[in-house]
Image 1 (cartoon, rainbow, N blue to C red):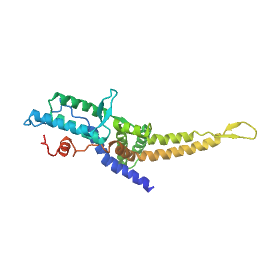
Image 2 (image 1 turned 90 degrees about the vertical axis):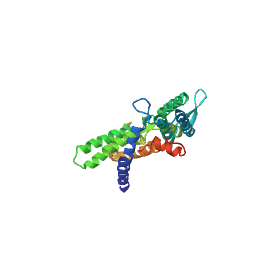
Image 3 (image 1 turned 30 degrees about the horizontal axis):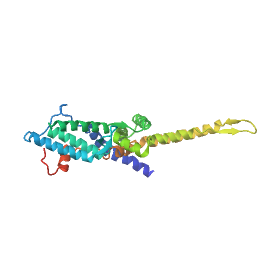
Image 4 (image 1 turned 30 degrees about the vertical axis):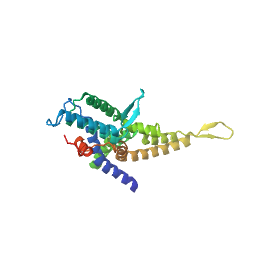
Length: 279
């Protein structure tokens, strides 16, 4: 029981208070800066246009060297994203170019557009969690709010459900990696319920003397009651552990790609181009 309490506490403390803020910040900021879409460039006008184009070319070369390549249907090699580190490098590099360099070289601009399309395609997120768990946890949350109890715990549970729902949105490059490694699979929550329902489908037959085989309704009824009890216990445990499952999903889907306020395109450039002139 102490292990269960530890997992619940870990889910609320690590999930709600640490993972959820990082998750919300990431989802709000992971879109690319788009020049001319209400966002102004912040480049230093004292830096020449030629110098800005030169630095932009260096940034593009740096981020492309860190990306993986794939062979397209036309037989040509294209860069792609296969990890959270590559996704962050591409985002910060493109944001630095668009915000602080505003290049005018047509070749560089075209390449920025191409890499922007790669970023949007490979970082698009798809829900891969369990709808069953969300329904169960939501129902449990409604029950908590309709009964006298600890308001703090009720609020933590609601935030835990939000964490799980958002953290279960997996980027395309992670899905591709899992499919190539493990093949087609469903969430572990769905596997639990599938196993339970398969186990509950067993039918019992009895034969009295030389007569025909008959369904043993009494045994099936008893087994059904046990199954309902087991399901209730499983549902209760899963509902309480929703925040913990959200933390696990965050680690699996965001651990290498989450953003935070101390990390932006300016700090990325200073770290990767320490000898270059900061713009």
